[in-house]
Length: 269
Image (cartoon, rainbow, N blue to C red):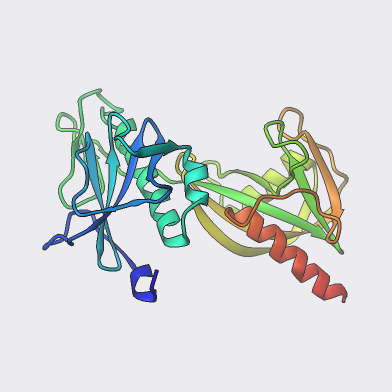
């Protein structure tokens, strides 16, 4: 893609005139459809049970589509695998499309009175015609904490991780918490440690199903590792030159671990 084609301008309603071609982020039962391993850039979006306009990427319209079945020639892929195969701009749009389609599906009926909801013109929202309850796309913030001590990183694994794989600690923000309060609580709950010197690293939209990963580094301030039963299968201090298998840079956890490890190496050089 050229630099001009990387600029994404979000929009709720289709702009006029329509672009000659459009990026089509299509899904069947939660799986993303690719044509010859790529997102389809079609002259016209294929017929779909649901079409949500996303905006324009460069000079092309972008659509999120929910289909009833996989069209001939297309292949359905788990979202995580499909996103890993895409360049950054398309990966971000695939994440956006998946989250909006899931939001639309999950709020087809009012959570207050059970009446079928309707799209709210001019907004990314659905409104109940009976009680006027409005629902917007849900975002669930989750904190990620990479704890460091000297030249060591604290990495942990949950029971569902791939054998031998470790990552940073993470957990969802609870009602009434600040991001910093959540980070302190999660680290204490999951491994029994106190931390200090919290430093913001970055964030990533994570469509499984609608999370926003907010990553921090934190310096160890005291305590011994006590893994939380049922949540943490193992947690250890690892020297920055002897790290176990960690997530790839596809996810912010991979960036966080590799960049922090490089920073700790530079401090001790």
